[in-house]
Length: 224
Image 1 (cartoon, one colour):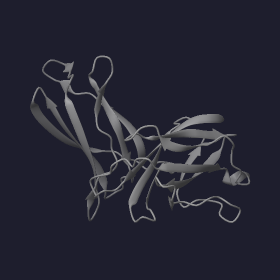
Image 2 (image 1 turned 120 degrees about the vertical axis):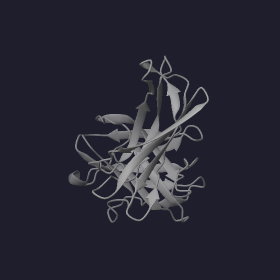
Image 3 (image 1 turned 60 degrees about the vertical axis):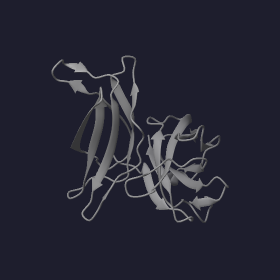
Image 4 (image 1 turned 180 degrees about the horizontal axis):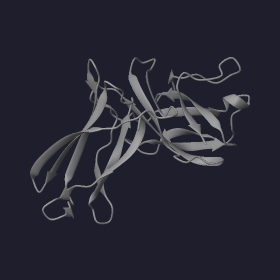
């Protein structure tokens, strides 16, 4: 769906009914809009699992399909030096809550931030994962390194109270997603207000929450 998706695939040899191991796989998701086409953030495809027949990565669909605009996914793969390619239209429905946001920073760079974890939030401190990418061109969205994603979770229906013990999102290693700690004191609807800071600590987008500023211009939403 719209937002961050872990995607796994296998390649089956119909002649032998066996799943192919040790293939090299790459992918390119493309949104076909009325007047243009564009891609979105995506990882490389890596081989996983004990038997080596499962390939996985992530794709961040920045918008949902609609009646006239759709996504397709091109898979390029090579098996023992032979190259193959296929393209299929895929369903990308809208997410119920905001899990991805695209914006232009004060540095005039277009960024994408997306919520990945926790998928099943709980009351207490949750391990949180999100991603930060920039638009290099319409088809290229590399990971942004060494930034910080500050966040302030608030409950708008409960006096906009926050929670203690949150840890802002930072990268553990270059090229990775961003990790932090999300504290949720009760069930219900939370708005996770965001601020994106560059490596120098300059805020590129987003606002500090105050009585006068109850929400940031960039945010995620969760409800549980």
